[in-house]
Image 1 (tube, rainbow, N blue to C red):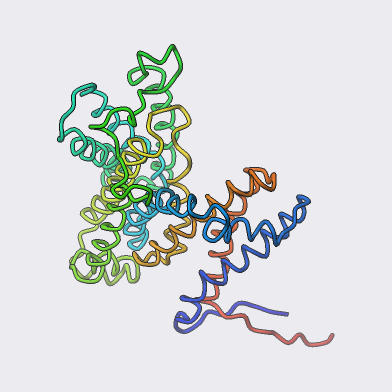
Image 2 (spheres, rainbow, N blue to C red):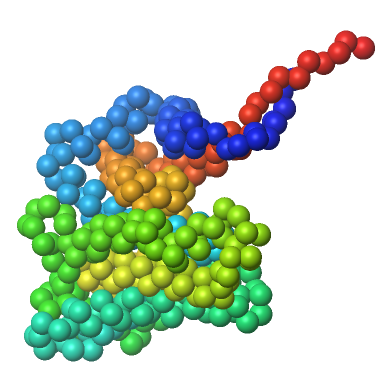
Length: 360
């Protein structure tokens, strides 16, 4: 018989090994899932993790790692700041949507004028939209002690309805012959988030994500606010006696995560997606939660975790096309990663002990 016994101190070895063990466990469980669907598990795993990097068409898929990974990294960085302080923003998907709507709305308001300042205004509007949407749960928590998890999550569904309304109404393309969706921003140079280096996948959103990683690292390790964030998450009682302002912390963490999610939405709608549409949101806001925890809430870890999750997106699309795997199976495979991450993470604070049972 076995039981869990709390460790005197968290295991540093398991803290670093947890993501690796979770990935291995996900591959094993995912292989069993693919086998149950009648597919070769080794071929499926190879298609997801190997082919995008080293396969026949890797030259096309490699730049997509940055395209897919950029928004995941940007959103996860913002979420990690709050998570480290025990502030749980689960509604980044809604902030991502509202940021995209605000950014696209500003760009389309100037159509067809050509001017250098339109894209910077879109960036500002996208960040502000995400920040304002995140301020709703932040202010409700500060003023009325509401649960930010529930409020931020429920606001995702409000944002989705707002997205549908904009696609069919205010932002609808007047030249679209009645079809829902805005004008395609790829056809509007002043509002288009083009690649910085042609063929690399590196656009302004990806660059912003890399900058966010650097600033988050500096904030958490070299700034007093970062110390307050870490202290609140690791020792809440000590934080109360260290002049940490909880109101300021809540507003900053939720506001920053909302602003970064809004920026991710703006860069996505002005670049890879190209337009506001009913199905614009693809779940980046929720997937970024997995990325944040897979990266151990550390900026550098999130960078690599975001690229890994992007790899599963691209490899999953290849597996659907070449092997006939259903999209739901790929989504389940990605969800397994968080499940096993949380399961294995238990061993950081607990050890498994064997208990001898006495014969009756």
